[in-house]
Amino acid sequence: MTNNKIHIFDTTLRDGEQVPGCKLNTKEKIELALQLELLGVDVIEAGFPISSPGDFASVQEIAKIVKNATVCGLTRAVQKDIEVAAEALKPAVRPRIHTGIGASDIHIKSKFNTTREDILERAAKATKLAKNFVDDVEFFAEDAGRADISFLAKLVETVIAAGATVVNIPDTTGYCLPHQYGEKIAYLYNNVPNIDKAIISCHCHNDLGLATANSIAGAIAGARQIECTINGIGERAGNTSLEEVVMIIKQHSSLGLYTDIKTEMLNPLSQLVSDTMRVPVQPNKAIVGSNAFAHSSGIHQDGFLKESLTYEIITPEEVGASGSKIVLTARSGRSALAHRFQKIGYDFNRNDIDVLYQQFLHVADTKKEVEDSDLQVLATNYVPAE
Ligand code: KIV
Ligand code: ZN
Image (cartoon, rainbow, N blue to C red; front, side, top):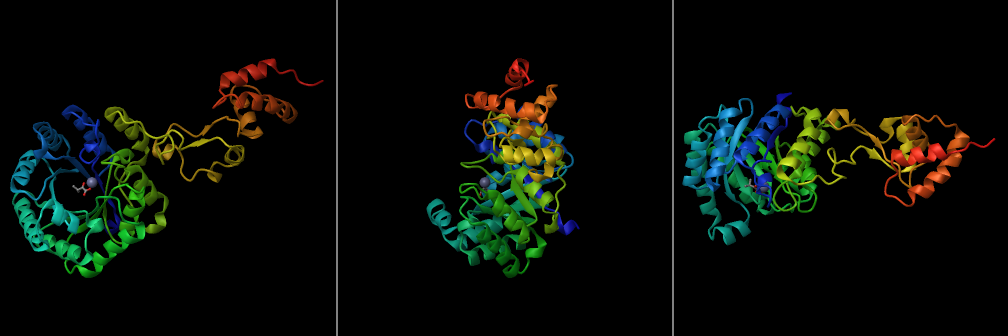
């Protein structure tokens, strides 16, 4: 069974925090880190220690306080970065250094102005250096989504030989289609001789709205770690959304995969991250959006009221949401209207509802949503036929 566990690597505090306007101070980062630990994530990427004294302090404080999850710090494949990260992570019970370098030709040529051979050397050197400080070293092959696949395989082989325990295959630009990303991971499993010595990790960005689908495709192909953020927050269009991958894995148990996430914490934590980072969650966001359990059209409401499973594949309680909602709009039907009247204390019969429904539609056409106070007025003014 352990082989089928998907390790959840949360990077809300690092990739998520890179979003303009989302910067967190040390106190806020500690509060979120403790909640992430309670949520059951396996790894907390606490920050990028060399980036600023404030982020160094945040990683250090989180390293002191988090006991169950691995605490990870990001570095470039640069000696100073690695030494600084190692220093920040010293107090951690389970420290991990996450180092890496560009793997695609555009990164190799435009960013580093160098050759593939040099990248292999730098990657091995950085991994070995990080290994001097911690046992657990994750290597990221940046822009792996657009990298030449045989070079990527060579790079993965090289860093595993140098001691990497986890190898991250980022689709940095959110470029891949799910089947392409899955095939990339499968190729690595079939072509890297020492691949069983490391965990392969998915780190997908959402530029084409495919981050979650790509991460799941990676896990189906054998990856056993998914890097994600609460609410899918992150650079540009964001990262893979933690709540989505976790619930997909739970919902589709036939995949044979599992995580250790306490799913009933998903909604409260989504709200906390949204409030702390001051980024609202879109209403139609899967799992944690305010409409994720709202039913507003007549056909859906009727089916839902007869049997909730007709229109809900997970229950709100399972993900800590406040409950399902029947929203009354001009698209709602008689069952929903009768149900809401009942909730506010009016038990109308079928004929009454037929009449009230026509009056309700007039009100509904003038409003986005009909409230209980509107129903109260309809009920009070209603005169039943003799
Ligand atoms: O998207 C990316 O490639 C990254 C790496 C730094 C892991 O965030
Ligand atoms: Zn990223």
